[in-house]
Length: 283
Length: 304
Image (tube, rainbow over all chains, first blue to last red; front, side, top):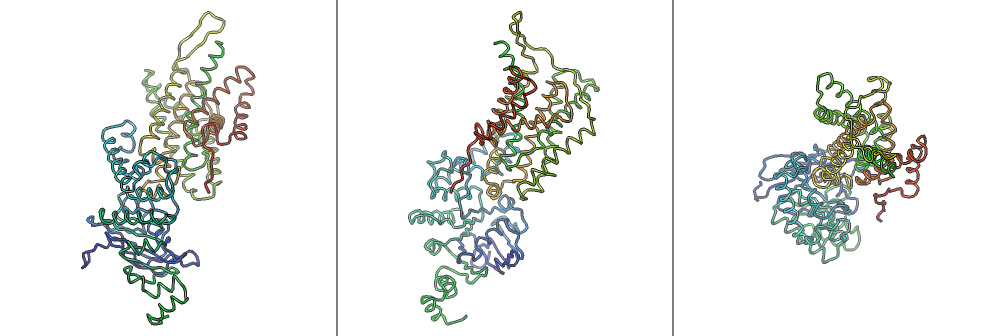
């Protein structure tokens, strides 16, 4: 907790990721707070997804410390040192991808039950109890289905629970991914372009859903998004990356008027020049 | 007609054994997309382990057949599973993420290794096993051709049915089965949901080996002779069964095993016994040409 009463959920310090000669992320530090939506924005190739890949164990950062402190647990997880599946299992970081990665051959409900694998595995005594249908496992399974149903209701998919995930329309699949990520009971939810390909109505619904998740479940959300209507509307805090460097960090109002951000996005054309001129040329 | 029914019984028995082995192929292929060519030899190891325990129990004076049968079944499953686990851990896991051919070559190496290991450790000679479970039913005695249904055949088929039912339940209902199906579809995503992918793959190998152990034990009791080379032919035929049924599909493996067993038996009965393997493998060729995704497999459609 800091003075403002906010809990720093994720502290990224000096994150650097180098692929051979390519410097994908260069000394980026930021904090994501609990009960806040932190957006990471930046032009294509700025290194946003690479940050996610470092957080979720796909890449081993060249330099940097990624410290996650779940609230109320007093524990500290150093994500850069953890194996991929343990980040989800123990540190409770969940993630979605830019492209949809559901289990298409499973039903909608089953997609959500898989996400509760570890609890069920424990309850079923590593499957044996499940095989013989013991009571302990049946109770656990019922609980898992209840949680899944809750998230299906939240995402408006409850009627589709038994259809196969692969046959859902695109927008529903996007929401199902978020529901599935939430079923892992994360403390930090990382969403990689959740609004991509959504129509304005769906995108507005997504905003509502994310705000609800933030307010009702008190978790931190880390959001990569290109759709500025989403970012500006729901983010509490925005981090701007450009060519792997952090160029700005602040609330939406601050970011909207930051000349460095405008220049990174629009280049040195009229708008940017005026914006840059008003802010004083500080190249 | 009597002759036909007799062949049907024999074919179903043989098919059960093939089916049990084929499940190991199909599951491993399903989860890591690799043909585990050492699986036939795991089956052979299972047969040898069973033989050794039978002999040991005989020396220890355990003569009550059901008890001996149960002990051998359990111990053979455990020991063979350890073999299956070890093969995966040593020969395949380090190559995960390598090019596709690498684990395949490693599997062939493992197959040769296991064959030679058993040959050296147990000798190259054919090992006989005195019949332990004898007797059965005879129907239509007195007609020109009586049908026999031995206890052994009943045991093989019913044990197979029970195991396969249990297995189908495990895949459909338990968290492990769900994790396996998840890993089959998207390993990375499964890991992100907290599924221990490496362990799930290991357990898949263990389960395949356990079924192969049962098949090995049944083979030993049914035919009464084994040698270090039985894994090769039985393995390739079970593989054919898995391909015929649709590789990656569990019911497909069972159906494929049954069909291969029946085809082989009927070919031997009505045509020439020398060409029974040719008949079985011709099916593989035909399946690959006309229905490469198998009878129950789904064609892979690339979504754009």
